[in-house]
Length: 111
Length: 115
Image (cartoon, rainbow over all chains, first blue to last red; front, side, top):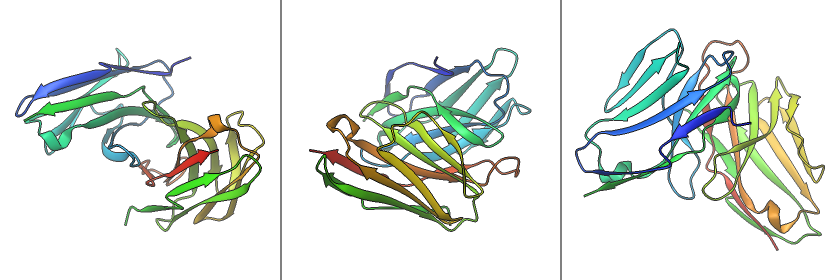
């Protein structure tokens, strides 16, 4: 059973454009929702995270939007750059443990 | 410092070998994890240690044996692995259950190849 769904599977964006990745979850006990960026051969790096009592969080070019009633959250990357080309995973956890990952989105930003 | 250090970075082992993966963090985190990641797939949880005690074993075969010697170290002992066990093995840590800050940090992983 896939606890965290993620779309799209792959995304191609022009440099300077906005990249949007969407996730949905089923377990209402999840209380922490991070996004990770992973480059080939490297471990996932924490980008930004949000708790369900906040509807939006922004850090630099990265913004998380959270809709608790719909059990959905999304990552927006503003002014996308070629260096942002990577695989992005949304995740969810309960009580700060047992992180469950979405299937991932492969982002390519064209120069 | 948000670093989780894993050694070795690469490991090639035969199906009859015994080897160990090591993970270390000095952030004072009390939860540590082993994940397995196959190519183009998300990390899959294998084990969770909470306060140096094994709290979750996601039905992992016994040829994988975790060990948490102290709050900073996590090992994964490997024995009689199969070629399908070849993957990137990731260690992660977080502050722990109910301890407020819930950020989890990952190491760079050990690329394991079983021949």
